[in-house]
Length: 403
Ligand SMILES: NC(=O)C1=CN([C@@H]2O[C@H](COP(=O)(O)OP(=O)(O)OC[C@H]3O[C@@H](n4cnc5c(N)ncnc54)[C@H](OP(=O)(O)O)[C@@H]3O)[C@@H](O)[C@H]2O)C=CC1
Ligand SMILES: CC(=O)[C@@H](O)[C@H](O)COP(=O)(O)O
Ligand SMILES: [Mn+2]
Image (tube, rainbow, N blue to C red; front, side, top):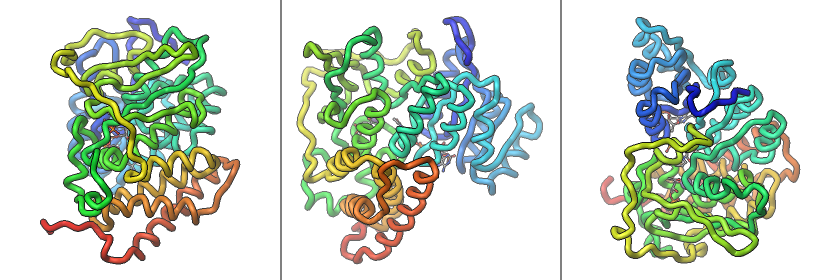
């Protein structure tokens, strides 16, 4: 384990550097060259951006998961002292490089699980954006982190907020946490309206610019469901200690209530660079020029109950949490397939919850899964979900007058 003082440079691997979190992380690194240096950048298919990032930041290694893009990246970086790797397995090996202090997991989906496990086993601090890792196998990840004395520092804005509220409260038990949700672009809408929304409608998040998958998750409230499970594992809570409240302005990023009833909140403008910087610089705070919050510009911060009858995903996630075992892993895989199908206009918005519910009912339940069980559950759920989608009657496919 490397211990850093305020003045030590931290050596960072960014998994998913070509995405929304990845590119913002590079902005933070660029602003703080005396604090952070990247040694590994990875992308899935965006070879052009990965090449551009490699030339700008000069990491020792880059890896592209989509092996068909490997020759292009290799050729473009031939004149530089940068080693180019291809395929998923390369990432799982590269995260163990001895010089790495922090692995920032910003790839999307289940693909984050195995590299994160490898990084923890190698003793690396994890700056965790990839919430799906904890949703799928939170028990294994948190136990491994304890065994290897590894910190998991949250990047997700809500969890960073809670983490920041807990500083100095190490001996004070949490009564409950309150996760804020924006409510997404369809807040206040009914099922009749949701039946006809398109991918373009759902991709218009009111407050955050993010990757497509998490943006759809936000619109369906699945993002908040995934965050409930993420919070359970990060902070050692029961489902009953986690409340979700809709806060359309996304200024209060989340809250912690202690046993004396006192509530602490962390606030600020919606900008992921702050939680990214906090995770990388932890335990220090670093001066920056991010736009500051002005209370008078937001005279009405509001809060309301989530509508879990219309947005069924959140209720399904609480069911999955109460059932435990491999049920959250089933929910995650079903949701990944459903979101991809929605983005490809194969199913409508409401059908995403149908896919998840059917998988929860039909995929084999395992009360005490091991890692192999999780990998099998993920694979079997995807097969079941694809079959289910292929059998959905035409009338519930996504309706889009533009096509
Ligand atoms: N965006 C945000 O503000 C927030 C995001 N998060 C979480 O962070 C993670 C990343 O989100 P976001 O940055 O928005 O997503 P993006 O879709 O913008 O970026 C995803 C990144 O992962 C890479 N990637 C995609 N599929 C795979 C795969 N199968 N294997 C390896 N790498 C892959 C992409 O590569 P390429 O582009 O080259 O294909 C890209 O670098 C998600 O888990 C999300 O829930 C959490 C809080 C906020
Ligand atoms: C920026 C971030 O952390 C996202 O997870 C965000 O919270 C999504 O917004 P919703 O509250 O709409 O899910
Ligand atoms: Mn979040």
